[in-house]
Picture 1 (spheres, rainbow, N blue to C red):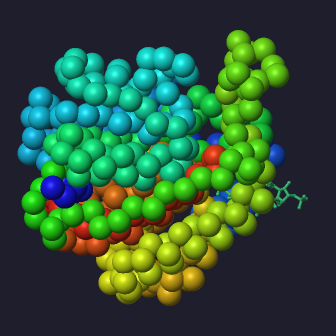
Picture 2 (picture 1 turned 90 degrees about the vertical axis):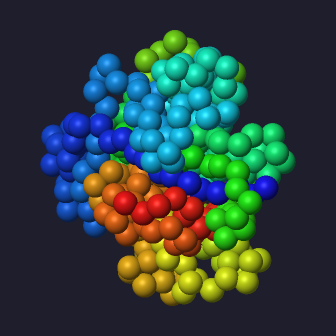
Length: 330
Ligand code: UT7
């Protein structure tokens, strides 16, 4: 059996936080944010809207587009760093319940912005081993809940949203996910972290600010460019695939300058590079499926198109994947 990427769905909350809005909150400017990051605006979940609420909306669309019923799903993996509850239950279990699935295998994974690629690799392994047939993977983030809106170094970057995909078993080799690379280096843990709220915390874990993200932005930027580039170069070489045959390069949407540097290193045309950072900002584990959904919605994604996914995030973690789209285009 092979694992096929059969459908995509996404959900974007209604409220928009623009760069001009941020100008009234911290010492920054629309010009600085756009020039340094490529971000114009990001979406923010409503106060009573949870990560699982957003995730479930994306999942429903992905299930419907795959032509499956909810009961066909035998596993749900949720990639998130902003779960509904920090210790338990998992956001995946809550999503399963909201979908009406009480017996499905459901768990979260923690790989920050690389979470969706990690989830994809787990789904691929479960399907290739014959243990599962239809796996729902979802990247869902309410990063606004863990963002310090007094820290201009981070609050300008992050947004909320969710994206989901169905990974199914197939005997059609042309639809098979070709390869996935994943890795991590915990010696860089302090570059991007939520330092409080866990067993390593030195602060009162009940503080409201316990889980706020902190980032050494400039150092992270440099490691990101190097790691993302090395990773895509190596997955293409390992599979003897030329960058020119990639239809859609779908990188994690952290910063336009990072994406541009990696795209240039691969000599990619602008048309190959999927960009959503301008309107969504950085949505961590949700960023890649939201970007794939964008090309689906705009009818640029067709069956058989080769996607190259590339992600990088806290941990540090990284991952890349060569994935033909096995679903039907819109
Ligand atoms: O998703 C996971 C991975 N995340 C990333 O890969 C993000 C990587 N990092 C970045 O995207 C960029 O490093 C940032 C956008 C966060 C920052 O851009 P930068 O070009 O690396 O700026 P910097 O941190 O080197 O700061 C340059 C200057 C500093 O002022 P001085 O020291 O030169 O006077 C900062 O204080 O810009 C200042 N600055 C700001 N100014 C206006 C930092 N943040 C802001 C701001 N508005 N929001």
